[in-house]
Image 1 (cartoon, one colour):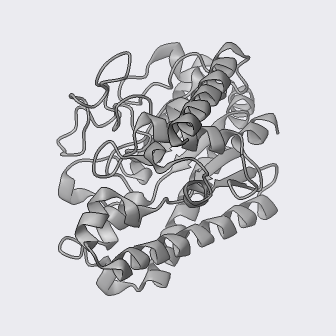
Image 2 (cartoon, one colour):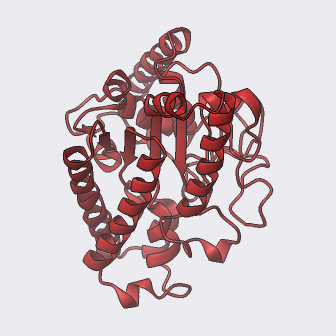
Length: 328
């Protein structure tokens, strides 16, 4: 029965994706900010342990290893296909010319909201630096559109912006006291507060650069990643402690979404409930098997991406999903 359910789901997903690929592109461009869940090559030339441009990464991807931290397509590849893009969004590291008009991927493995996050792994492009890179792209888009400020702003206003970050601020910061002092400085509630306050300021910068349609991804079940399960061992309270930290952060992100929607003119922020998508899924757990100690397989991303784009449950997205965000 489990195999039948898995097969039926995969057929449904592939059919849905095929429909989207052959359909009309729903927004002019798709800009991506985040960490290794979204990175598709920005870390390839950095001095870091957080890179994936070698086998077996990419073993199921048509181009082989590209810098995606999985066996095939990643989260934003799936979402881009649902949005009707014929090709994946290029990484900032290689994007050039007219292709930036379709969007740019700035995500970087090991990156976080905080500047120091992930530093024990080497170089990475923090969210602050990703926003600086986006400023370069915005300037280049204005040039491509004839240096017409109003035309460029109107164009950027129609795009979708994905922000999926914060995982490393816990996995490669707060829960690594041997490298970072944050867990000694802040309790979990305080840390979630200062993180989301910083994220709020960063999102205001993005908004000032023309972003009106923004999808914010909550943190997933970080305590159930292989790396954290290994760290916790048989200590269930350890896993519960991580889950509590995730919940505190996600709750504040939902509040942030409400604040932005209520106070920023013509702005539409949505929240993708990554944790709840996992918990409420009726599919068998093999769909969520991990490719490595932290990152899901392409099959896992198919589920997350599909439900982020078109919610299967009212708890998947708030106040609505990416499909409706694109139509708004």
